[in-house]
Image (cartoon, rainbow, N blue to C red; front, side, top):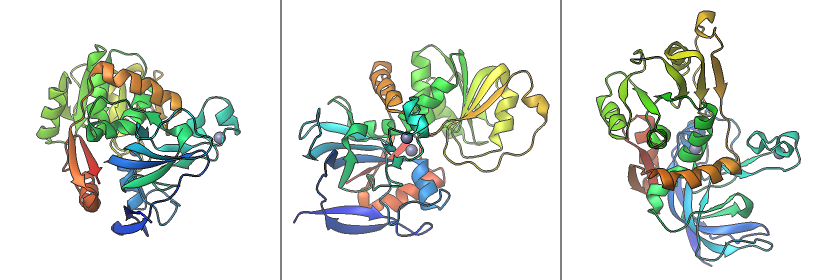
Length: 330
Ligand SMILES: [Zn+2]
Ligand SMILES: [Zn+2]
């Protein structure tokens, strides 16, 4: 029996543990994927830190998976052995709830999430529902593409929700923002990057990727902006972003978890400003982004970690020691 390795979370707030287990077989509708790279997302951190309730336990985190098809279950069409594919956060949906029927499968009442309710990609192998996998083609490196699978896809959904305005603020300049800044600049938009006060490295990084201005989150941008997307899990950024957007402007919260939003004067919301959140992704978001990203020439800055050092990658992300995205390579 061939064996695989996985970094396993037994209980929230404990380190992941490296385990060997037999390589599973793909059931009907599934594929076995040999993982080439898996990005580390802030959502993984929320699972490990116990900020997202009721994960399947034990769980293998990781939902920015790039790998090769190593086994194909009965009834799967359209994929071939050895093909490079991506597996995102949206692992499966029910297809029958009102949300699924209305094309809002991101809001499905009975979803399966990769690395949360089914085992993910912090491993040498994983099983995925083939209907939620995407062909990735052969251009671009595995590690450089891995962050596309969540930071890119959910970032793209957030970006669409922000509307077509020409000026866009990005709060928290991590993996998602560093991808979107490139897309926005390519589309001729003006990007304003907001980071932790004094984080000049992140501000320089943002400018190097096309931001026309970078400063602290508490700073006013040099001109009012059409929309803002908040990627940092910090509720206090909501009133700050509302203060920065124009009349009718949108503030999109792109994360799955945020600290409490402090109370703020109604005047900040007045004049038809909007605050909204983005939840998960649809397969259509994925198809759109995977089409746009190569055209926009999106390049991810990644820091690679061997699989066994997943805990170190998580703590570097938690402590803000990373520029761009962390990626595990088995
Ligand atoms: Zn559903
Ligand atoms: Zn994610």
